[in-house]
Length: 448
Image (cartoon, rainbow, N blue to C red):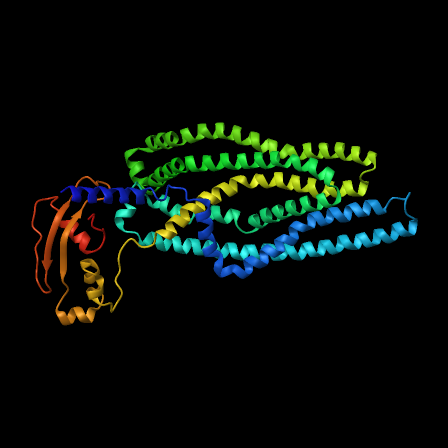
């Protein structure tokens, strides 16, 4: 008896764990592994897009180098008129060449990322819909799941993933490459100026990451509240005739407003905190400019660096800082995409919750699995006709509905029906007659 109680308790815990599986946020590494698995068929396009994005990110620092040498060559005190004209033509040609490289790189990057993103969204929608169809009725009816919330995984969550993938992801990657190249180039030309400017970058990065963290926590906390309100609105629209006949418009409006009130109040508080970090990330670039101008002028007056070195640092590193601060304006899209991808990958990885035997499989290899052997025998109509029917066997079956796990409908039921035998299920209402038929039809799985 104690052993059976332990098994029932373990089974209930497993059911509860499955019910809360969609609400749990998967680790970022697990989400990335699933994403890589889906992108693998488009690895060629993804590699091409990444290489092109590297060139896009390098063009910012390249323009800074050309601009610095251009200003240095246009000094009339150090160069003749013919030399200035010659150098001006050369650097103008370099800028034109850089523009051509950037044009081709941008085209290839956005083309590759766009193709990968569309294929990814197609796979996510198809696999998530197939996974939802493979789940049993007990899964769909447990934990208050509704068609609206489940279909939101295919529609809303897929759109959130698509909003960050493609060109948005390419932009973020190009900015990261730009920052890395700018730091290296700045230390090569003027490391004293670069070190001072580099000290302020952690402030910029920290404010951006704090904004991203606050938005992620907000999305995770309130997605259930908004889904509940959406389910209520969907129910009202689908039953609009009943609502109109019974005059339930005010009741539904009050309930909808009541569900939206708590997240609405917390949006204001979360927005204040988030926008503080957003303001810091936006203004840090200006503070870095002020510091760079002051410190750079001091070193130029001492003769340690020239205007050419200072302008290269100014355009390369400070432009990177401004792009980096602007990148965190995409923090809401990144937060929503991460949580949406976690939910979609959870659904995709669940797979089928019912056992389907393979045609022609040897029943002796099922190791005593009565359900598996029964399913295998029933899959071949010719064999069933030759035997005159199929055998139905229950052996120690217990069952409780997911919404009432403590009320056991069937408790250790065992019987066997040979082929071509008529059977009548007799009992009072609630004895489990319909439940037995549901189990035979594989609409539900036995609890134990």
